[in-house]
Amino acid sequence: MFVFPGIGRSGASRTILAGAVLAGLTALAFAQADGPDYFRITGLKKEDRVNVRRAPNTDAKVVGRIPKDTDGVKNHGCKGGLTPKQYAKASEAKKKAAERERWCQVEYNDVKGWVLGRFLAEGSAPESESKSQQQATQPQMPSALPPMQSAAPSIDCSKAEKTWEKLTCADQELAAIDREAARLYAAASDALNAMPGFEQLLDSQRKWQEQRATCFDRDCVAEMLVRRVHQLRRDFKETRAQDVKGISMGPLVARCEMFPLPIAVTYVNSDPGYVYLEWLGAFVVIPHVPSGSDALYEGNFARFHTKGNEALLLVPGGKMEMNCKFEKNG
Image 1 (cartoon, rainbow, N blue to C red):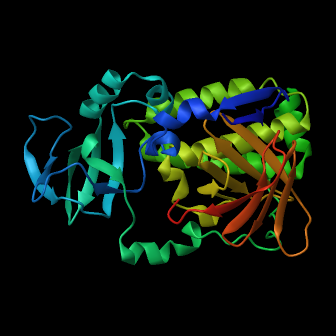
Image 2: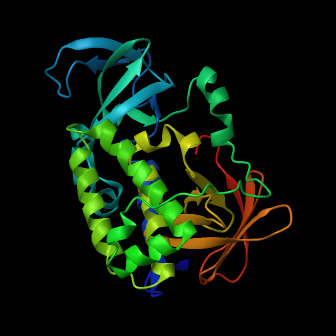
């Protein structure tokens, strides 16, 4: 059994009992709240086709059909079913019931409608789009991060009273990350206003604000901001639509030798910057440090050294670095 600790804001150790969760690990482990950007049709018999319906129920009118094993089916959002955390704890009976409840709105060959989630697996983008997205899906970390533009935080510093507010207003890097978190939240809010997922967004924002209000030092504020950037990018695909306007990238997926779990990786290219690593139930925020020609992140009992599409990772509590590779379309 493997045991890896993750370091949280308080510095307390969290333990991952990887052997106990491997059996239940599925593609849902790091899926966004609405699933991947593209699906592949699965679970059908030879020559079968999956029904595309006008509404998310089995009584709704069929507006189209998609053949077995079709890839590149665009995802417009899902509803129902279980979250990754619920899935990990659910019984087999509940998992099967959830498969019948989850519906996803998809688009294929100009037909848009709803498909039962049990017929969908993570797919890949059509060739025309995958070429335009190659830079994002094949991360090439620069040897030197681009200069961060001067920016005020999203809050009104003339009214700053709480410790976290004063720290953010007095620190150029914290201000930039705060601005990025606010940009991502606005993108998700504008896209989801009065739509499925909007209540989830509001609830997660409220809980995060309550947690940030407990910060009384810079490291805590930085970790909370970087963590929020990752959460928004992970859970709401709308936040990843205009990356050229921001300073964050990800989440990407890394697979490491001797480590049984996929690792979600989000970069925040402030100055000097951070990387956020998350694996089932644990996370660590690592600051960027100067390093010759490669991108090196070191701190919080962890080390992440990237070069092209590969990286060396030392997790908190680990005894040796692991070789990692970024997944294409991760």
